[in-house]
Length: 369
Ligand code: PMP
Image (cartoon, rainbow, N blue to C red):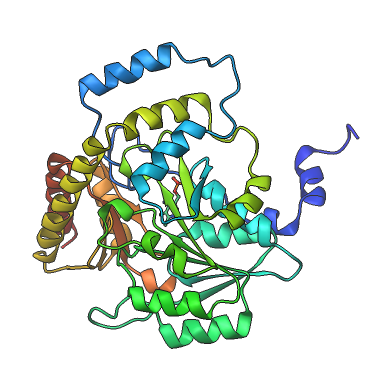
C-alpha cells in the first residue's frame, strides 16, 4: 500500500461523478468590500450583541445540542405563520436540506429537475448524490419575460422526465426575479413528485408559498436565515406537512444544528423586528441601486425581489477585475451558464458600500473606455 500515492488511490477509489466535480468556489475577500455572497451587511445593535455574549458564555458547549431543537423550532413555527398540520425540519444551512431531500428520493434512475440559470447547488448535489439532473432553460426576451419560467417547456419536461424532485428558487438566484405564482402553482400541480419552493430570499420578496402549503400534498417550502443576518450560524428549514417531515427526519444527522447556532438564532429571532428592519433598509437600498445602475448607459440591470441585483455589461470579466482592483468584490457570472454571458451580480450592501461600488464601477468604465 505504501508504494501508491494518495492521489492515484483517490483516482481509482472515488466515484467518477466526484472526480469530475469542482468544489464550490469561495474567492478570497480579505480587504474587500464584500458584495459577492448575499450576506446582510449589518452588525447587530450593541445591546443585542451583549445579550448574546452573555448567553454564549453560559452555554453548555460540553454537551451535545438538543437533538430536536425544540425551543428554536417553536420560535420558527411562531414567526413563520405555518398553516395547520405543518411543521419544520432544521438544517445546517439550507444546502444540507437540499442534500437530504436528494438522498431521500434517490431511487435508481430518479431525476432532479430545476430551471436554469438557478442556484448551482441543485445540479451539484444531484450530481454527487448520483441523481439524474435536468435543467430547463428560463425564458429569454427583452422585457419582463426575461428569466421568467418557460411554462410550456417546463411542463413538457416534467411530463417527459417524471422528476422525483423539483427545485424552484422563489425569488430565483442569480437572476433575482420572482417567478409568476400562477406558473409555479401549475408546475406543482403537474409534478408527479416533490416540489420544493426555495424561499432563501423571502425576507426581500413580495410573496411566499407558505400560506399555500396545505393546498398541495407534494409541496415543501425551504427557507434559510443566511440572508437575514445569520449566514455565519448556518441555519435553514423545510416547512411542510408532518407526513413528509417525519420521513425526512430519519435522514437528518442527530446533532446537525449545534448548541451555539441554536442558542444565538433563538435570541435573534426573539428580536425579529431588528432583522426585519435591516431587511426593509436593504430593500429600499436595492431599489435605489437598481435606479443608479439603470442610469449607467453601459449597464442593463434586471428587476430583483432579492437582496442582490443581476446586471449585464460588455466586457464583464474586465469590469469585475476593475472593481476588485478598487477593493469591491462582487460575483462574476460570465463564463458560467450561456444565458449569463457578460452578467455580474452585486449584493446590496450598506448605503456607503453601495456608493463605493457605484463609484468604483464608474471609474472602471472610464478606464476601460
Ligand atoms: N437556496 C438559494 C436559492 C440560495 O441562493 C442559497 C445561498 N446562496 C441557498 C439556498 C443556500 O443557503 P444556505 O445554505 O446558506 O442556507
